[in-house]
Figure 1 (cartoon, one colour):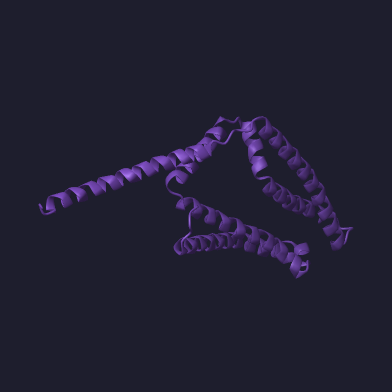
Figure 2: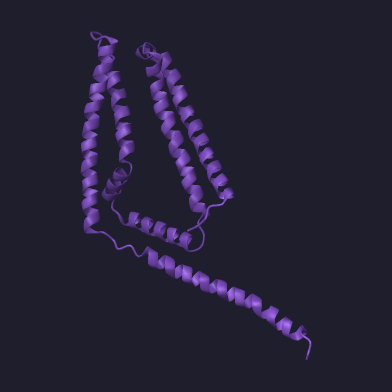
Amino acid sequence: MKIVSEEELQGHTSATIRGATEGFVGSVALAVPGFYYLSRRWAYYRALPLPLKVLPVVMVIAPCISIQAERRGLAYDRAQWTGAGKMELDKEAAEAEARWNALSTKEKVKSWAIQHQYSIILGSWALSIAAAGGIIARDKHQSLPQKVVQARMWAQGLTIGVLIAAGALTHTKRQDAVRHLPVDHSWQSLLEQQAIEEEERKTRLNALRQPTQASSIWTSPIA
């Protein structure tokens, strides 16, 4: 087990803060102009209470901060791996890339949808509520609260459909994983690589000791 040093902890913290800053700047650059655009162009948006106006901005900024911070932290952790651990990670990454390249277009789309199902669910909800809001906003016979409720109901209906589809994909993935469950031999490769590194270390130590021993023999006084 590797003992984490204080310097590594500080580096991880700095990487996480840098990622959070990047996520904040990028999301603000996207959300704030959208906020002002809707406020100027859409009368129904201007009529909303301030908390409801700010809610979409927060829903964009908060996930971007947390996701980018986690990505930077994980990237820093991977960069600290050395020796057998790094070789095993590189091997797994190469195998994953080879499996991805071997998939057909349909299988790639399916795999991508499974891996990003939560993003798809959230995005479909936001897109559906925006589309429903734009359509319902044209109805002049409904009040603003009624339009908000209608848009929310349409968005919930579509989101339920997406959730059902995501559940079906997840179930299919689990069945495929059970049928083609690979045997994990990574621990064997890791032990073998560690043994090789240990032998190389001993060889280097012996090579360093031999000149020292030889010099001590030549310089020792003859009894």
